[in-house]
Image (cartoon, rainbow, N blue to C red; front, side, top):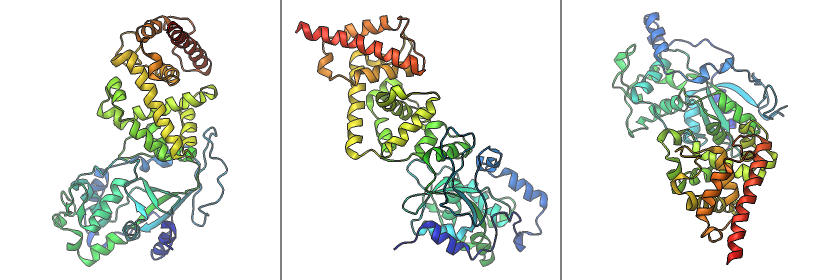
Length: 421
């Protein structure tokens, strides 16, 4: 039976006698004569990430050697002032992480993460930083149910290091030879295999600080942690963090539905919209409102987290039903309003509250029930938007009042047309 990533890490890490709180790194002998100012300049120029400042966040994490990874977490509910998650901090040599990767126990490409973006010069400077014995920001990983570790924060750094050991630069699959080094300029052009035995040992035995987020941490606590650490120095928004914390076939379905041609047409999505997960959040919002509008309470983010949490346990049949529900609803709306769907007045911008109302109402009908009634529905919405009870505000009272009002108006139009037949 294959060992889990953590079991293997503990075995490999025992060869490196450092403690989690040790902060002094030994400068390799070949680098000791280098000007200290150059070392500081090298450190300052290295790409920074949020994990360098994560210590300033008000998140209550258990720390220290000897803590059990799977001990009970006293509070993972998002409404607590200080979330606690099962987090262990330990230091492991680069070679240990390389072994995990080779055995398929370290996932550098989680489906919910963006790709590797560093250029070779940035990756080379990281290698130089380690060879100089300078500190490197900590790395966050998330333990999965199958025993693997998903990279959470530090993907660019870990990918750079392990790719250098493998000799292949990941962005072009070409030979990874160092470039752009200033302090250790004599190493420019060299691969890992070209380094001296001492340099190779310094790199492979370098102790990386890992924070390991245990698999049994609640997804709502994981969501908050993901929001407090980031990828590539750019803060994650709620949906980006939600996708990672609640990753499941349900989140994968949102990805697929975001490619719906009608949605893309009425949204006019930009590349940034896609990166920000805007459409995926809209789709999740529809499913949450459709099934649980009566339970809505502010803030919206918590409401959507609850929906994402419920989605983890959905069966394949239930996921298929949701896909069909979404496609029917948006297809019906587009059949009536076309490219002006979900727009208030003559605005070209999608109105989220109008999205909620129209999607939930028109998910109740089959397309043939609306045939011959498109003009009447368009005119009625214009009148409804002027009604004193049809306020496009996101509160539990307004939501239910608006939805009930519009459901009745559309039902009257549909039933009137049916009686004429």
